[in-house]
Length: 222
Image: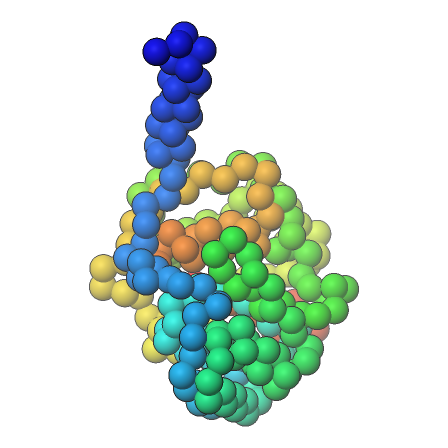
């Protein structure tokens, strides 16, 4: 075997080994993930909030979703009906029901965010220099993300306060949550939440601001 080929092969195997050490284990809920292009024979759902109908979509088609609610969003009846098509078509129909939002593909996930850039919360786009957790569940890591130095400083600058409203059955802790490890560098909080959702085999993360002045916010991973 030529010497150059041996060196290239050794480099490739070394790189593969390094990647396998830092890779997130495949989450059991996402093993059947086919992506938004998968066929939909029927989707007919009603809900009182955008996050609820997105969670229903995620549950049925194993599509992990990131959701940033429009500031001060109030519960409103939503019905989405698609008789045939793909998950893309369902997402389009969901957005038609509330044009304040857009949806975008994001590395194995779907993010649903406000269509107006100036209403998106800057916390979610803050860059975190180094994020590293080991053998942790989504409940604990959800508490930790807003204690990261870069995020904590920005929250204080904006005069925001975190307060969780646990009003859904899915907000109750699971009996046996998945433990996972994750390491990211120079990543926005939005991307970190996406990776947590995939690694923890969760359906959706949701960021919401509320009260009259939108001074309180919540981050839920379900």
